[in-house]
Image 1 (cartoon, helix red, strand yellow):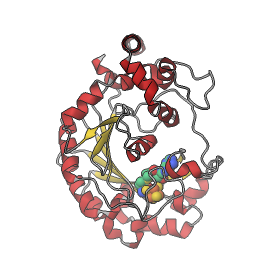
Image 2 (cartoon, helix red, strand yellow):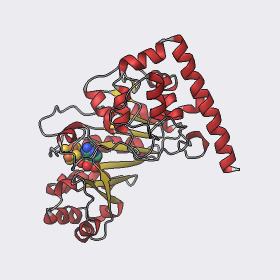
Image 3 (cartoon, helix red, strand yellow):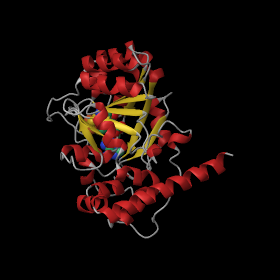
Length: 352
Ligand SMILES: C[S@@+](CC[C@H](N)C(=O)[O-])C[C@H]1O[C@@H](n2cnc3c(N)ncnc32)[C@H](O)[C@@H]1O
Ligand code: SF4
């Protein structure tokens, strides 16, 4: 039962929410007018040093636009390199005006780029200028485009522009500024699979030094609202130690429930209604989370579950009742144990 929560293998760092663009679909609501705060290198070092000893495999630099702060990137890349940890930097390509902003990435071979081009769709010249400016970094760059048309992007067309780069497309989630998009541009993402492989297996650090148990779209909203009573909040570095954050993670009944009986199991147990849900999505054992049993690396991607998770995490009263009432709590603990045992038996059978 203690194994239900993994020590995070992926650390996501929101370096800043400053951005030189302000995309209409941005879930972090970043832009030129937000505060200048950046993540503190000493906090990055604290987390990376601690997690590296427990098998941290990847750090993701998010934002805002991380390349606006090359000195900060340099420091973070160095910390990660000292532990031989790979770093993925998500970027919007605005450095095309000043490619020296990418110098830290050029210097650190443990870093690669994920370039988003959704915001330049239809502006082929800009996309070509950006991919040309990558130079030798193109070998360490992948391209992603979010489907803000909602109708599926013509990948073939995009790749005609991006040339040798393959373009991965992904769906736009209705968080942050994207909630204002018409539904055909950002359809509700409920829900293909009642599975989340991220919660409780990744850790996120924000510029305000807070640490959270998810790197998903919804956690930014919670951080913005300073929703410290949610099960996803683990602590604030400077005040709390890494061990305090880990204690909150390990003893977290709601996260254990989500990782065993799934979001819909938790909703049912706590009496939470997930808006837009029919009976099709009932409780299920969260089998695809193999975690401790071989699939050490949490798969990236959220399996379309974040919107359901947001409903659960904002149902404070129900979650408090579930954890505070002795009978409900005992039942929840029992559910986790039974589901975990069953999952282990199934896993043994599947891998025999
Ligand atoms: C928040 S941005 C930060 C990094 C950088 N500024 C960029 O745009 O690549 C990280 C990634 O999230 C994507 N993104 C932003 N809003 C989204 C949403 N509502 N749903 C899905 N992806 C989104 C961006 O397109 C980008 O690929
Ligand atoms: S999606 Fe990226 S580029 Fe666009 S506003 Fe958000 S952080 Fe900036």
